Amino acid sequence: MNDQPGRAQKQSGLISMSPVKVFGSAPFTNVARVLLCLEEVGAEYEIVDVDFHAREHKSPDHLARNPFGQVPAFQDGDLMLFESRAICRYILRKHRSTDGANLLREGNLAESAVVDAWLDVEALQYDPAMHAVFVQHRVVTALGGEPDERVIAESVARLRETLDVYEARLTTRGYLAGDEVSLADLSHVPYTRYLLEMPYGPPVFGEFPRVTAWWERLLARPAVRKVVSMMGGGSG
Ligand code: GS8
Image 1 (tube, protein in one colour):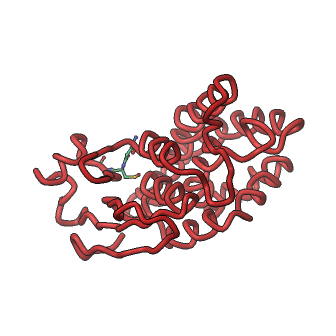
Image 2: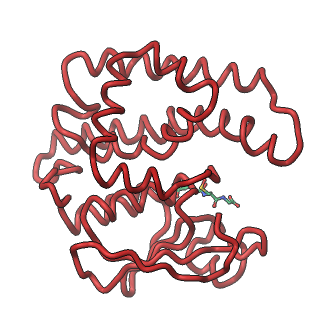
């Protein structure tokens, strides 16, 4: 996390939509998800750091952007939004990915419902299991505590059950919501990037060859590679 409050960094893309603002920094997984969508569509954006050490995320100014005092918050003109997946859908409804991928399957009622379903799986099954592992492995140790190995083992077991479903799903299609990449796949990128750096990640992924190949296909996308590198050391 950058410790310079309010310092804006300008990133250039292809589309000029009077640069939108993303409050929060790239190492936060939920911020990285939004940056990934902005990179996919080639939007121009500014990252405005929120200084957690100074509790800037709980300040009145930030609470006006995100009433839960969290990052990300997102501003496009008069529109202020929070919740990373809602922000992603907004960005992808406004612009198509630069390679033409229809990441929400807009225009197809059934296919877009399938994207929504797998996006919910990511948010409600993958993310909580990953979050618990991340907190124990990175946050508890950073605060000088001992990680709770029982919590880690339970979460890794839940993760394995989820990946088992993904492995079966990927038998007949290249991506979770069909043959083409969608937001449901991209939404997995931030935590998967951290998982694979933790000792638990590579052995678990190694059990699932189709999931591993899916991750490699995602990493082939320039936007994914860019955000994976912007995430740096990691804040969860
Ligand atoms: C979660 C935001 C969140 O947890 C979303 O945007 O998708 N469902 C929301 N943000 C974290 C940092 S990212 O890991 C955060 O701001 N935590 C500080 C806090 O809760 O006080």
